Length: 159
Image (cartoon, rainbow, N blue to C red; front, side, top):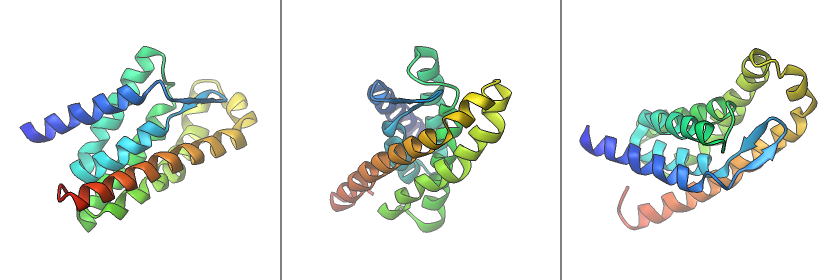
């Protein structure tokens, strides 16, 4: 448990250090660093990566570096990679599943649950295409970085 907690703290710190590098799109702030951390944390921690995603999202929100959309935009991606690393083992390619959670689960949650609950349904709908493209770009950049880092870690014998 102690080692796992240490990894949660380190990955959360990494995500927060990268937090200023976000892309404001409509009512959201896309954050490639979150997807990068989700991939690596999911690979190393399994489903515990959800704790990392939730902590980064909460702290970004408190610091004004993120929005409430950080939760549905990050937690599903971390969960998908974390579960995949349990099922398939610590193989670098599992980080490539992060967009499945972000775009396949997180974006619909944002559209149909979070935005209407916040009274932003119309504003989110008006920005839907830019938001979807921005999130796809964000998760693509972060996932590519996580995959490169996972390959490097594999070559170094760390995973």
